[in-house]
Amino acid sequence: MSLIHLMQNKCPKCHQGQVFSTTNLFSFRPAKMQEECSHCRQNFSKEPGFYWGAMYVSYGLATLEMALTYVFLISIGIDAFDFLNLGVCIALVLVLFPFNFRMARLIWLYLFTNLIES
Image 1 (spheres, rainbow, N blue to C red):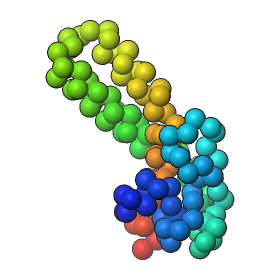
Image 2 (image 1 turned 180 degrees about the horizontal axis):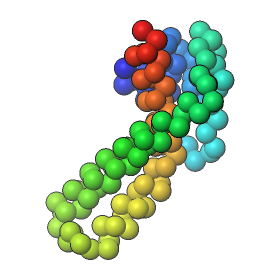
Image 3 (image 1 turned 135 degrees about the horizontal axis):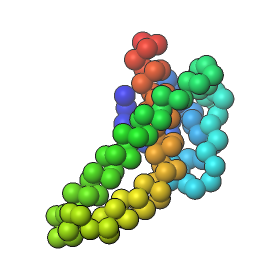
Image 4 (image 1 turned 90 degrees about the vertical axis):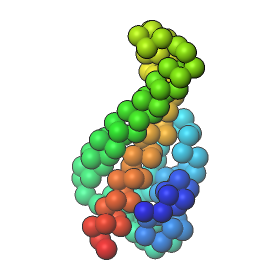
């Protein structure tokens, strides 16, 4: 899996076309996926319910982000059981939701396009 192409929102097969209509993964505009790659015609909607598994990837991303934030807050001296830690972690996940949504779908698509169809 090419991390650079994944972060650039590129097609997992040809690395030319865009998967989402917006190129910015941090955009708060609604995420609209292309039906297929504009370059190689790779189908991005493989079957109904295909992206349900991306929820697990999104959960993993959010958990990693919260864990890193928690470790950072502890390292700068904020108490381990302070409500500030919880508030910051929840706010971070809410702010990063658009990124996590798009990134989880891209990771899921890359995994199944590159591993299963190879």
